[in-house]
Image (cartoon, rainbow, N blue to C red; front, top):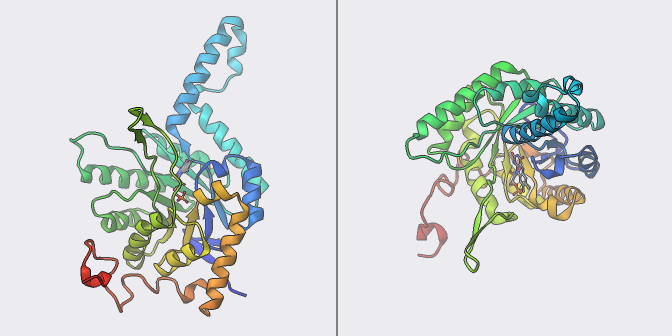
Length: 328
Ligand SMILES: Cc1cc2nc3c(=O)[nH]c(=O)nc-3n(C[C@H](O)[C@H](O)[C@H](O)COP(=O)(O)O)c2cc1C
């Protein structure tokens, strides 16, 4: 029997399949179903400061309405600015009590001041780790890449000082020099990296000439981007990488581990196939390991990463070189 155990951000996992932050983890019963299906850990739906603000505004409107009818009752409401965080933390606590597998909370803030406060609130729920969903879109031509990176390293530094639990940073692939940025984050205390977030991709319907907000499910081809960067970076840092985007099968998981990942995060395929697919993916990974005579993940982790010789340049090449593709 293959041993699928691994560690990621210092957390022991029974296998390398983590369910990524998504609607799959918005209710306690859904998380229980993922645990029953064999998931090693679940990242909870992000606590978005943006959402908290929208909720607080709606709450304030309700309160104003309520005020008109009953002046005394207003003192029964919690302070507005913390209502969203408290509700989320309460729910996360319930989830923590309901399952045994590690739970990782996730936050995404708009303002720099909130990150450490949200992190502290979530650490208080008993979660095993924290994922910083770092994305804040830059929409102007004045901010430099260095300013963005400096700000994000500082945010991590502040969160690191605020909590003791392990912290992973969920990255997007659009940094100018990703390996350097990852190293800076590791030096600032990151225990793990999720590569990558798949950002919302708006579309345009050319027949109706309207904007479309729709969900495009990922597939194995989308996994080639995290595969490359996992292979390029895994050997250069101590922190673990959880590969994410487009991973839908046990064979996809095997690829990421060969590239050096300590874990994988899975979302899209589980939204479509439901939690039972977790079991199928783990069976497929086990079958592949048996076929290749690997008793545990360490036996092949990073075997095909860039730093492991034989072929130093497949993952480094950025152009279609005919010789590399055998097309010359
Ligand atoms: C409907 C939906 C909601 C998501 N919500 C979050 C979120 O709250 N926080 C986050 O970090 N990622 C979120 N994600 C991104 C996923 O965690 C994951 O990074 C992305 O879907 C790529 O993985 P996949 O190819 O397995 O789907 C969401 C994805 C989907 C499809």
